[in-house]
Structures are given as structure tokens and as C-alpha cells.
Image 1 (cartoon, helix red, strand yellow):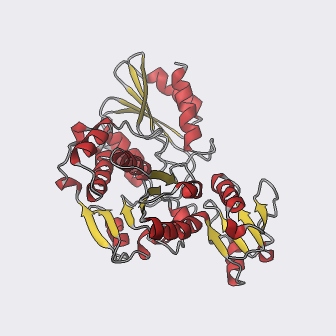
Image 2 (tube, one colour):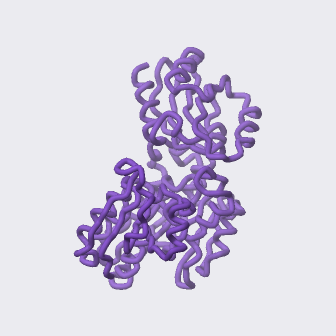
Image 3 (cartoon, one colour):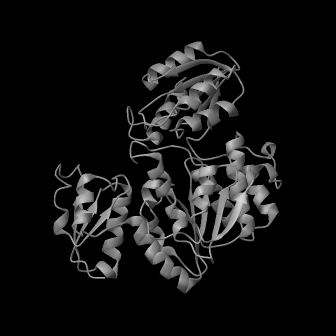
Length: 397
């Protein structure tokens, strides 16, 4: 693979990982590498034609006009995800490794982490990467014989991906990222990349109750497993520390995949029952003055906040709102109206002001919940920063 001049388009976490990869790879030993990022040069989208290869970061849409024009002119683009799959496929053929990809609108991180812990308790050479926070190119040098890689995959990462994992997992699909994708159909089509290139030797797990998950699964040639949460019996919701029906469904999916990979039921039950969940996902922070505080900052769509409302049954003071993703919030409005335990909603305020107002209103036995149902970009760089700001406010109570 001879590319004399390479550009990394976007220099966030994945762009930085791509640079580390290129510098260590023999395939790109003599390449000249340039960084294209708006923080470096405001005209970073203007010179694509001068490069032999451009590695596009997930946060920049394929339909960006400059990218669309460059593609028509024959400029070669790839992504970190594609580079990973190219090399992981070669590694899996040689080392008998397996790549599991998990996608969905919500629940990806919880399911991926829970499956990782189940597999890690059973065998060696298990890795967790992707949208969960570890760039997948960073784990390539560590892959050994019989490796198992579990990837959390966003629509940004797999759109136009010419590869699919050996085992694909599709969770609940709802409208999301419509400020990035041009419509819901484009969003679903991006998610469907996880299925499109599977073969008869692969496996596809999907939620039986979600019609969009079924739609994606039907694009796969793999052996299909429809996970019906109502029929799942290995453990029950009360056996888990995770809150809510949505988290029980995620745990059931992780367990179903783990069972198929030979993990004993006893290990699965032990891991599932001890798992507290990931940060910023219905995360219990503290109980102060008799008031419980929960951080659900990762709830960036209305359906996620609906799930949080339905999971916490005590008198609730809800802090919500943020930057729009151009999705319909009617389900959330309906859930708020139908929830008699919601005492007050503090919407579209500065977080500090909303927290102070909620604290003033809260009484002993109440719950103060941050579950925005929207993106964080109106006040914060990401949902993690927003959640950490909430935690700091709670700490100072």
C-alpha cells in the first residue's frame, strides 16, 4: 500500500489514534502526513485533491459538500474504523480471532461493557474499544491468538464501512443524530453497515421488539438470533443493580451473546448482578439531606429520558434540555404528562441555575435527576463534561 501523501481529517481522539497508527505502520513508512483540522487551519476542507489518501474522522459527515465534491473527483477517503477492520480481518484469519460489533441508538456502552466483563471472566485476550472511549486502532498491536474484540460502534463510525463484524449486535434503534444525518433513513442505513457485509459464517443478534433493529438484521446473510426480552429467563430485573426495563434488556442481550460464546450461566449471572453500570447512565451519585441524586447525562435523546423517568418511581425533580438533534420530542412530553411522580421539570436552563432551583424545591425522599434528552453542545463539549459538572454540584451540596 503506497500512499505518498496522507491527510488526517479531524484531529480529535480518533484522529490522534490514526496518527499513532500511521507512524508505527510499515505500510505507511515513507508517507508524508498532514493534519487537517479547523483548530489548525480554518480552510482545512479546501485542499483534498492534493492527497493520495484522507483518513476521515467520525465527527465530519460524509455529505459535507467539500467531501462530496472530492469523492466525485476520485479522491480516496477511508476511516479509522475501516483501517481497523482491514487489519483485524487479516489478524483473525491468522490468529483465529473474533470481532463483535455492537450498535444501537442507546445501550451500546452498557451492553458492550457488560459483555466484555462476562467474556473477561471466562477467557483471556478480550478487548473493549470503539465509541466506548478506546480508539480501536490502539488495540491492534495487542491482538494475539484467539483474540476477542468487542466494539461499541456509532453510526458516525460505521457509515459507508465496507466491512461487518463476525458477530453483530443491534440494540434499540430510535431517531437520533438528525443534526448530522440528513434524515432517519440515512441514519438507519449507516447503522446497517454492521450487517451488510456479513456472511453465512457470521452471527447477528438483534432485539425482537424493535422493528428498526429487525430491518437492519434482515440486511445480513448471517445466522440470526432474535432476542426476546420477555422470554429471557437466566436472571430477572430484580437480580440486577442496573435500573429500568431498558437496562434489563441490555443485560439480556449481553448474556445471550455470552451464552452463545460458551460462557457458563453462573459466570454470566454473577457478572450481571454485580454490574453497577457505566458513568453518566442513570448513575447514582449520592444521597444528601435525604435527597437522591442521579446523573443520566448520556441521555441525549428523548427516549432515553423517557426510560429514566420510568425507572425512578420516587418523587422526581427533572433537569433536562440542551442542544437539539432535530428529533421528535413528543414521546418525552407524553411521558412527563403521564408521570404523576414528577414534581417539577427544570428545562433549558443553565445547569447551575437548574440545579439550584431543583435543590430548593426538593424534599427528603425526593430524587433530583439530570436526564437532558438532548445533546450537550449548548453549554458543554460533550455529555461527559455535562455529567461531571452535575457531579461537582452534588458534591458541594
